[in-house]
Length: 276
Picture 1 (tube, rainbow, N blue to C red):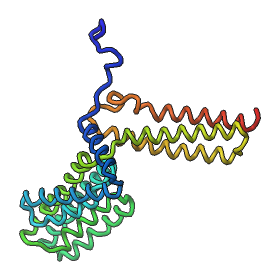
Picture 2 (cartoon, rainbow, N blue to C red):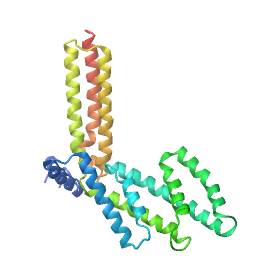
Picture 3 (tube, rainbow, N blue to C red):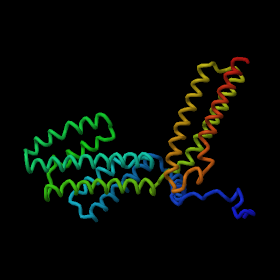
Protein backbone atom coordinates (compact mmCIF):
# COMPACT_ATOMS: atom_id res chain seq x y z
CA UNK A 1 0.00 0.00 0.00
CA UNK A 2 1.15 3.57 -0.67
CA UNK A 3 1.13 6.40 1.88
CA UNK A 4 -2.26 7.50 0.50
CA UNK A 5 -3.86 4.15 1.25
CA UNK A 6 -3.96 3.02 -2.38
CA UNK A 7 -2.33 -0.11 -3.76
CA UNK A 8 0.84 0.40 -5.82
CA UNK A 9 0.47 0.88 -9.56
CA UNK A 10 1.50 -2.68 -10.38
CA UNK A 11 -1.25 -4.02 -8.10
CA UNK A 12 -4.13 -1.85 -9.32
CA UNK A 13 -5.10 -4.02 -12.25
CA UNK A 14 -8.66 -5.19 -11.81
CA UNK A 15 -8.79 -8.98 -12.14
CA UNK A 16 -10.66 -10.47 -15.03
CA UNK A 17 -14.30 -11.28 -14.42
CA UNK A 18 -15.41 -14.79 -13.59
CA UNK A 19 -16.93 -15.12 -17.05
CA UNK A 20 -13.65 -14.13 -18.71
CA UNK A 21 -11.68 -16.61 -16.59
CA UNK A 22 -14.16 -19.37 -17.34
CA UNK A 23 -14.00 -18.55 -21.05
CA UNK A 24 -10.20 -18.64 -21.00
CA UNK A 25 -10.15 -22.07 -19.34
CA UNK A 26 -12.75 -23.42 -21.76
CA UNK A 27 -10.80 -22.00 -24.68
CA UNK A 28 -7.58 -23.68 -23.53
CA UNK A 29 -9.27 -27.07 -23.07
CA UNK A 30 -11.11 -26.74 -26.37
CA UNK A 31 -7.89 -25.86 -28.20
CA UNK A 32 -6.12 -28.89 -26.77
CA UNK A 33 -9.00 -31.09 -27.89
CA UNK A 34 -8.67 -29.69 -31.42
CA UNK A 35 -12.13 -28.14 -31.57
CA UNK A 36 -12.61 -25.63 -34.38
CA UNK A 37 -15.10 -22.76 -34.62
CA UNK A 38 -17.67 -24.82 -36.55
CA UNK A 39 -17.65 -27.66 -34.03
CA UNK A 40 -17.69 -25.10 -31.21
CA UNK A 41 -20.83 -23.45 -32.57
CA UNK A 42 -22.48 -26.85 -33.10
CA UNK A 43 -21.92 -27.72 -29.44
CA UNK A 44 -23.19 -24.33 -28.28
CA UNK A 45 -26.28 -24.63 -30.45
CA UNK A 46 -27.10 -28.14 -29.20
CA UNK A 47 -26.78 -27.01 -25.59
CA UNK A 48 -28.96 -23.96 -26.28
CA UNK A 49 -31.63 -26.19 -27.83
CA UNK A 50 -31.55 -28.54 -24.85
CA UNK A 51 -31.76 -25.67 -22.37
CA UNK A 52 -34.57 -23.91 -24.25
CA UNK A 53 -36.61 -27.10 -24.44
CA UNK A 54 -36.06 -27.81 -20.75
CA UNK A 55 -37.12 -24.30 -19.74
CA UNK A 56 -40.26 -24.45 -21.88
CA UNK A 57 -41.26 -27.84 -20.47
CA UNK A 58 -40.59 -26.79 -16.88
CA UNK A 59 -42.89 -23.82 -17.50
CA UNK A 60 -45.52 -26.30 -18.84
CA UNK A 61 -45.85 -24.42 -22.11
CA UNK A 62 -48.02 -26.11 -24.71
CA UNK A 63 -45.71 -25.50 -27.66
CA UNK A 64 -42.02 -25.71 -26.68
CA UNK A 65 -41.13 -26.03 -30.36
CA UNK A 66 -41.14 -22.22 -30.66
CA UNK A 67 -38.44 -22.00 -28.00
CA UNK A 68 -36.30 -24.36 -30.09
CA UNK A 69 -36.81 -22.32 -33.25
CA UNK A 70 -35.89 -19.15 -31.36
CA UNK A 71 -32.74 -20.73 -29.92
CA UNK A 72 -31.60 -21.65 -33.43
CA UNK A 73 -32.15 -18.07 -34.62
CA UNK A 74 -30.65 -16.24 -31.65
CA UNK A 75 -27.59 -18.35 -30.75
CA UNK A 76 -24.71 -16.66 -32.57
CA UNK A 77 -20.95 -16.98 -32.48
CA UNK A 78 -20.40 -14.07 -30.09
CA UNK A 79 -22.08 -12.44 -27.12
CA UNK A 80 -22.58 -9.18 -29.03
CA UNK A 81 -24.30 -10.87 -31.97
CA UNK A 82 -26.45 -13.00 -29.66
CA UNK A 83 -27.53 -9.98 -27.59
CA UNK A 84 -28.32 -7.97 -30.72
CA UNK A 85 -30.32 -10.79 -32.30
CA UNK A 86 -32.06 -11.53 -28.99
CA UNK A 87 -33.03 -7.88 -28.57
CA UNK A 88 -34.43 -7.77 -32.10
CA UNK A 89 -36.29 -11.03 -31.46
CA UNK A 90 -37.90 -9.75 -28.26
CA UNK A 91 -38.90 -6.36 -29.71
CA UNK A 92 -40.28 -7.96 -32.86
CA UNK A 93 -42.08 -10.61 -30.85
CA UNK A 94 -43.79 -8.02 -28.65
CA UNK A 95 -44.91 -6.01 -31.70
CA UNK A 96 -46.14 -9.14 -33.47
CA UNK A 97 -47.87 -10.42 -30.34
CA UNK A 98 -49.69 -7.11 -29.94
CA UNK A 99 -50.81 -7.23 -33.57
CA UNK A 100 -51.85 -10.87 -33.19
CA UNK A 101 -53.93 -10.16 -30.10
CA UNK A 102 -55.61 -7.28 -31.94
CA UNK A 103 -56.43 -9.58 -34.88
CA UNK A 104 -57.91 -12.19 -32.54
CA UNK A 105 -59.95 -9.56 -30.68
CA UNK A 106 -61.30 -8.06 -33.91
CA UNK A 107 -62.03 -11.53 -35.24
CA UNK A 108 -64.13 -12.33 -32.18
CA UNK A 109 -66.09 -9.07 -32.28
CA UNK A 110 -66.49 -6.92 -35.39
CA UNK A 111 -65.07 -8.73 -38.43
CA UNK A 112 -63.80 -12.10 -39.68
CA UNK A 113 -60.29 -12.84 -38.45
CA UNK A 114 -59.10 -13.21 -42.04
CA UNK A 115 -60.04 -9.59 -42.75
CA UNK A 116 -58.39 -8.41 -39.54
CA UNK A 117 -55.25 -10.34 -40.47
CA UNK A 118 -55.12 -8.71 -43.91
CA UNK A 119 -55.49 -5.30 -42.26
CA UNK A 120 -52.63 -5.96 -39.82
CA UNK A 121 -50.33 -7.51 -42.42
CA UNK A 122 -49.27 -4.48 -44.56
CA UNK A 123 -47.89 -2.37 -41.66
CA UNK A 124 -45.72 -5.23 -40.46
CA UNK A 125 -44.56 -5.98 -44.00
CA UNK A 126 -43.56 -2.33 -44.33
CA UNK A 127 -41.81 -2.48 -40.94
CA UNK A 128 -39.83 -5.55 -42.04
CA UNK A 129 -38.83 -3.85 -45.29
CA UNK A 130 -37.89 -0.60 -43.54
CA UNK A 131 -35.92 -2.23 -40.74
CA UNK A 132 -34.95 -5.82 -41.38
CA UNK A 133 -34.33 -6.58 -37.71
CA UNK A 134 -38.06 -6.10 -37.08
CA UNK A 135 -39.01 -8.97 -39.37
CA UNK A 136 -39.68 -11.01 -36.23
CA UNK A 137 -42.85 -8.96 -35.76
CA UNK A 138 -44.23 -10.31 -39.02
CA UNK A 139 -43.11 -13.83 -38.17
CA UNK A 140 -44.77 -13.66 -34.74
CA UNK A 141 -48.02 -12.37 -36.20
CA UNK A 142 -48.19 -15.32 -38.59
CA UNK A 143 -47.25 -17.78 -35.83
CA UNK A 144 -50.04 -16.51 -33.57
CA UNK A 145 -52.78 -16.19 -36.16
CA UNK A 146 -52.12 -18.85 -38.80
CA UNK A 147 -51.01 -21.82 -36.69
CA UNK A 148 -53.91 -23.28 -34.70
CA UNK A 149 -53.35 -24.61 -31.20
CA UNK A 150 -55.26 -25.84 -28.17
CA UNK A 151 -56.52 -23.53 -25.46
CA UNK A 152 -58.30 -20.22 -25.45
CA UNK A 153 -57.88 -17.69 -28.21
CA UNK A 154 -55.95 -15.25 -26.03
CA UNK A 155 -53.93 -17.93 -24.24
CA UNK A 156 -52.24 -18.87 -27.52
CA UNK A 157 -50.25 -15.66 -28.09
CA UNK A 158 -49.05 -15.51 -24.49
CA UNK A 159 -48.00 -19.16 -24.54
CA UNK A 160 -46.02 -18.68 -27.73
CA UNK A 161 -44.55 -15.42 -26.46
CA UNK A 162 -43.23 -17.20 -23.36
CA UNK A 163 -41.82 -19.98 -25.53
CA UNK A 164 -39.91 -17.44 -27.61
CA UNK A 165 -38.59 -15.75 -24.46
CA UNK A 166 -37.35 -19.13 -23.20
CA UNK A 167 -35.38 -19.53 -26.42
CA UNK A 168 -33.84 -16.07 -26.09
CA UNK A 169 -32.82 -16.61 -22.46
CA UNK A 170 -31.28 -19.99 -23.26
CA UNK A 171 -29.26 -18.49 -26.11
CA UNK A 172 -27.91 -15.65 -23.97
CA UNK A 173 -26.92 -18.02 -21.15
CA UNK A 174 -25.10 -20.34 -23.55
CA UNK A 175 -23.34 -17.42 -25.27
CA UNK A 176 -21.89 -16.27 -21.95
CA UNK A 177 -21.05 -19.60 -20.34
CA UNK A 178 -20.47 -22.29 -22.98
CA UNK A 179 -17.25 -22.36 -25.05
CA UNK A 180 -17.12 -18.59 -25.31
CA UNK A 181 -14.00 -17.48 -27.17
CA UNK A 182 -12.20 -14.76 -25.16
CA UNK A 183 -12.27 -11.52 -27.14
CA UNK A 184 -9.07 -10.25 -25.50
CA UNK A 185 -6.98 -13.06 -26.95
CA UNK A 186 -8.22 -12.51 -30.49
CA UNK A 187 -7.91 -8.72 -30.21
CA UNK A 188 -4.22 -8.89 -29.33
CA UNK A 189 -3.61 -11.56 -31.97
CA UNK A 190 -5.19 -9.27 -34.58
CA UNK A 191 -3.09 -6.36 -33.29
CA UNK A 192 0.07 -8.47 -33.61
CA UNK A 193 -0.84 -9.31 -37.21
CA UNK A 194 -1.45 -5.62 -37.87
CA UNK A 195 1.98 -4.67 -36.49
CA UNK A 196 3.47 -7.32 -38.77
CA UNK A 197 1.71 -5.76 -41.76
CA UNK A 198 3.00 -2.31 -40.77
CA UNK A 199 6.55 -3.66 -40.55
CA UNK A 200 6.15 -5.22 -44.00
CA UNK A 201 4.85 -1.94 -45.43
CA UNK A 202 7.78 0.03 -44.01
CA UNK A 203 10.25 -2.59 -45.23
CA UNK A 204 8.91 -2.44 -48.76
CA UNK A 205 8.99 1.35 -48.69
CA UNK A 206 12.62 1.39 -47.54
CA UNK A 207 13.57 -1.00 -50.33
CA UNK A 208 11.48 0.97 -52.87
CA UNK A 209 9.50 -2.18 -53.70
CA UNK A 210 6.03 -0.73 -53.19
CA UNK A 211 4.17 1.84 -55.24
CA UNK A 212 1.56 4.25 -53.93
CA UNK A 213 -1.36 1.96 -54.78
CA UNK A 214 0.16 -0.95 -52.86
CA UNK A 215 0.76 1.24 -49.81
CA UNK A 216 -2.86 2.37 -49.89
CA UNK A 217 -4.04 -1.24 -50.23
CA UNK A 218 -1.96 -2.32 -47.23
CA UNK A 219 -3.34 0.60 -45.21
CA UNK A 220 -6.91 -0.36 -46.11
CA UNK A 221 -6.18 -3.93 -44.99
CA UNK A 222 -5.04 -2.46 -41.68
CA UNK A 223 -8.28 -0.50 -41.39
CA UNK A 224 -10.20 -3.76 -41.81
CA UNK A 225 -8.24 -5.25 -38.92
CA UNK A 226 -8.96 -2.14 -36.84
CA UNK A 227 -12.69 -2.57 -37.43
CA UNK A 228 -12.38 -6.16 -36.27
CA UNK A 229 -10.57 -5.03 -33.12
CA UNK A 230 -13.32 -2.48 -32.44
CA UNK A 231 -15.89 -5.28 -32.66
CA UNK A 232 -13.80 -7.43 -30.31
CA UNK A 233 -13.64 -4.57 -27.80
CA UNK A 234 -17.42 -4.38 -27.86
CA UNK A 235 -17.47 -8.11 -27.19
CA UNK A 236 -14.93 -7.78 -24.37
CA UNK A 237 -16.97 -5.01 -22.75
CA UNK A 238 -19.86 -7.48 -22.38
CA UNK A 239 -17.72 -10.12 -20.69
CA UNK A 240 -17.56 -8.32 -17.33
CA UNK A 241 -19.55 -5.92 -15.21
CA UNK A 242 -16.85 -3.28 -14.74
CA UNK A 243 -16.08 -0.81 -17.51
CA UNK A 244 -13.45 -2.11 -19.91
CA UNK A 245 -11.22 0.93 -19.30
CA UNK A 246 -10.99 -0.06 -15.62
CA UNK A 247 -10.96 -3.80 -16.09
CA UNK A 248 -8.43 -3.94 -18.91
CA UNK A 249 -6.98 -0.49 -19.69
CA UNK A 250 -4.39 -1.87 -22.10
CA UNK A 251 -7.07 -3.47 -24.26
CA UNK A 252 -9.26 -0.37 -24.08
CA UNK A 253 -6.45 1.84 -25.41
CA UNK A 254 -5.38 -0.62 -28.10
CA UNK A 255 -7.44 0.76 -31.06
CA UNK A 256 -6.28 4.34 -30.47
CA UNK A 257 -2.64 3.28 -30.33
CA UNK A 258 -2.99 1.22 -33.50
CA UNK A 259 -4.66 4.07 -35.39
CA UNK A 260 -1.85 6.45 -34.54
CA UNK A 261 0.85 3.93 -35.39
CA UNK A 262 -0.80 3.03 -38.69
CA UNK A 263 -1.30 6.66 -39.69
CA UNK A 264 2.29 7.58 -38.87
CA UNK A 265 3.62 4.48 -40.62
CA UNK A 266 1.68 5.27 -43.79
CA UNK A 267 3.02 8.83 -43.89
CA UNK A 268 6.58 7.63 -43.32
CA UNK A 269 6.25 4.87 -45.93
CA UNK A 270 4.83 7.26 -48.51
CA UNK A 271 7.59 9.82 -47.88
CA UNK A 272 10.38 7.22 -47.99
CA UNK A 273 8.93 5.57 -51.07
CA UNK A 274 8.82 8.95 -52.82
CA UNK A 275 12.47 9.54 -51.94
CA UNK A 276 11.83 12.60 -49.75
